[in-house]
Picture (cartoon, rainbow, N blue to C red):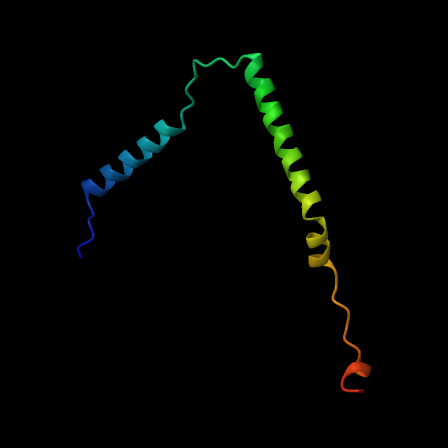
Length: 81
C-alpha cells in the first residue's frame, strides 16, 4: 500500500479539522420548556427512586444473604456418626 503524502493528505486533514470545528460551534436552540415539562421530569425522577426502593425492599433478604459471609464448616460434623 502506498502512503499518500502531498497536497491531498494536507487537504483531507484540513477538511477534517474544519468539520470538527463546525461541529463544536454552539448553536442557539429555539426551544421552550414550560413548567409542565419541569414537573414531569421531577415526577419521573421521584418515580424512579420509588421503584428502586420497592425493588430493594422486595429482594432485601436475597441482597442480605448475598453479602453475608458463609459460616465455616466445623470439623466435628465430618463423619462423627
